[in-house]
Length: 167
Image (cartoon, rainbow, N blue to C red; front, side):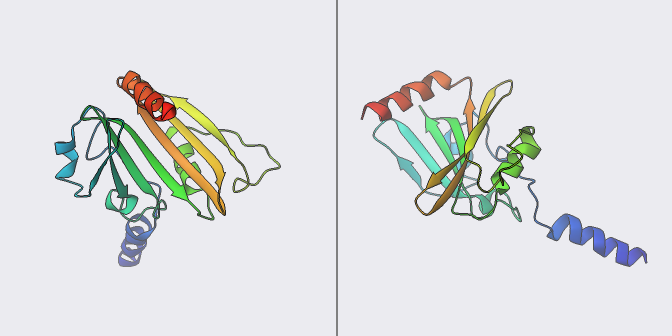
């Protein structure tokens, strides 16, 4: 009986996909590229506005997660991590919404709307980071986006976004 119970616990904890995922386990806001490149060896994309972006399948960071199929983008401005976001496109679930609610706090949806059909956003503000969840329509589907902006590097993010907008 004890053996059966042990196997059951193992199955629930290890095998069952979950929302447990720490995007900041290998890098923190303000860290440089060297800190992440040794742990996550993926190519870096440079843009014309001073940004450098590392795009990583979430499976590289969060093994056995319900967020599989998503991508994590780390944006470096002036060599420092300033923004992180998760993109989840064309999925027939709201796993990123559920992850957001579980990790950062619930938010209400209209009772008559199925979460898959809802479109909108929610914002959380924590001590050093602003968190924004967004679910929007895209060609032939929907996109869920969870964005983390460091308040410390907010001014650089605003300048960066403005440069992109003016282009």
